[in-house]
Image 1: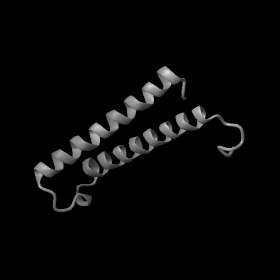
Image 2: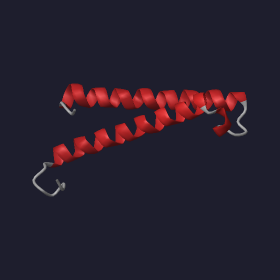
Image 3: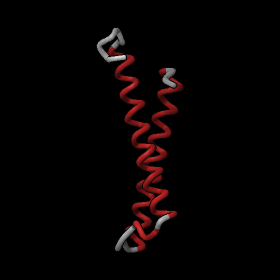
Length: 78
């Protein structure tokens, strides 16, 4: 269904928020999997850089999950 096929702006906006949160969730999980399971993919990062990148990816994942939970709880977006 196209956004122009009768979907309200509210529904389109909520679906956009959900899609963005899912994208961030997927990116964070992928980053964590690469850093934790494929160290050759990390390159020349120092230990400090690695921990910073791990924490950044974890924060992004937690934020995305919180956004998805909030959309479900308050706006019934599933």
